[in-house]
Length: 151
Image 1: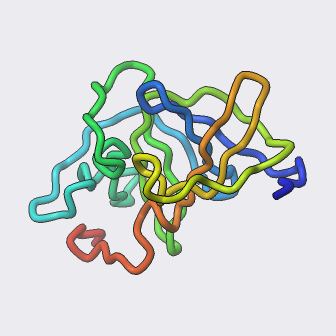
Image 2: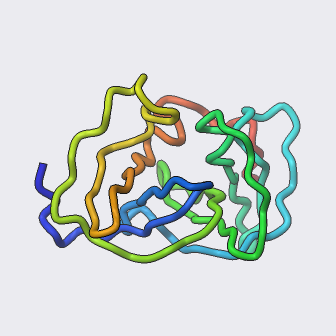
């Protein structure tokens, strides 16, 4: 499946894995800040942050992918994306670069990889392959975030 070369992606790292998010889905990238836990929320929701007066739910990609949490350090970031007209945060270990892909291959079967159902495709770059995240699937199509008080 050709990518058209004009789409740009932000490449982030989670442990030894690299993932890309389409730049059109990203609102901003911020340093880690205090995350307030939300009782009785979904297991992959780390909590909420106050982003200039807006309450933004933040998810742990490690928890979402069902892998061990990685420690937060100076390179860790929150990638704020738009999901259903709302801002949502994703914790990543680091943000590496902006790139585009000449070609995007279809993802492997959902059951072949950890977190595979959240992958839209595989982009090829000079130094390897990068999984491209599907934001709609990552936050769970049809899932409600009513347990996270955004008011």
